[in-house]
Amino acid sequence: INAYLVDKTSNEKFAFGKHVKSDWETAGFDAASIKEWKDAGFNLQEAMACKKDGHAPASCANILKKFESAGFDFIEAREWFSNGFEINEGKEWKGKGFSLSDALAWKKNGYGSEVAVQWGMAGINSAAVAEWSKAGFDATLAAVWNTAGFEPSEAKEWRAGFKDADEALEWKNA
Image 1 (cartoon, rainbow, N blue to C red):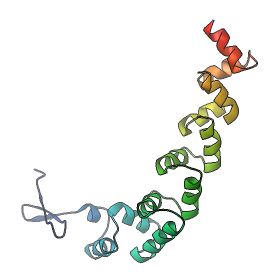
Image 2 (image 1 turned 90 degrees about the vertical axis):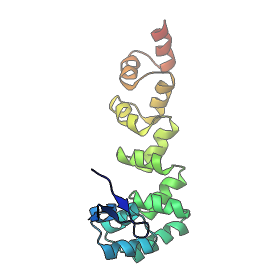
Image 3 (image 1 turned 120 degrees about the horizontal axis):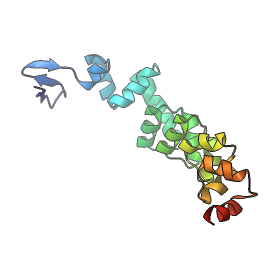
Image 4 (image 1 turned 120 degrees about the vertical axis):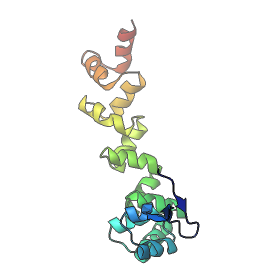
C-alpha cells in the first residue's frame, strides 16, 4: 500500500507512523539544508540546479537577482536559471525573441542562437535543421523548398534536375 499522510507544517510524509522520504530527501538534501533552501524561497528544481553548480542558497539568490537586473522578471529568472542558462546566454536568447521552451529545443539539438535565428526566420524548426543541412541546403534555400512543400530528401532529388523549387513543383504536380 502506498498510502501516506502529509504533515501540513513540514510537508513530511508519514506512512502508518513511519517517515517516508520527501522528494527533497530523495534528491539528497538533509533536513537542515531543506529548511535553508525553502527559507530562501527556492523550490526543489531550483535548489537542485543551484546545488549542481555548487551554489549555496545565498549565492544562488544573488545570481537570480542578476538575472532580474538583466531584464528577466522574477519567474523568468528562476525558469531560465533552473534550466541551465547563464545570465548572458539567457539574455541573448530572450533578446532575439526566443521563449525558454524554444531556446531549450534549439540548444538540445546543438544549436546556438545565431543559427536558430537564421533557420527560424526560414520557417525551419530545430529538429529539421540537420536533415536540411545533410541534404545540402542552407537556411535560405531550405525555406524556398520547404515553402513549396518539399521534404529535405525529396528536395535534394528534385533540386538536381531543376533550376528552382517552383519549376520542380510544376513537374511534380503535372
